[in-house]
Length: 64
Image 1 (cartoon, rainbow, N blue to C red):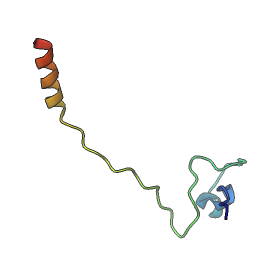
Image 2: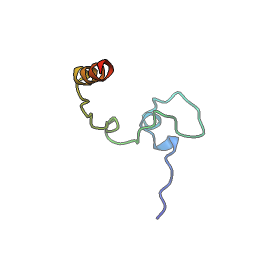
Image 3: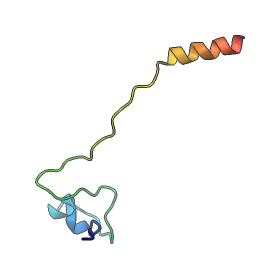
């Protein structure tokens, strides 16, 4: 079974009459039509090390 690529007819905005574009392919705001409009899942944020620790190591290396 091959999956069909998404089309404008499958878009939430087109389905609900909210689209004002006349394009041949789905635009970057394409959202699959469903019961509700849900944003795409966001990647998990990863904490970076504190800037002060990196700065102190750089100053120490420069002073040496």
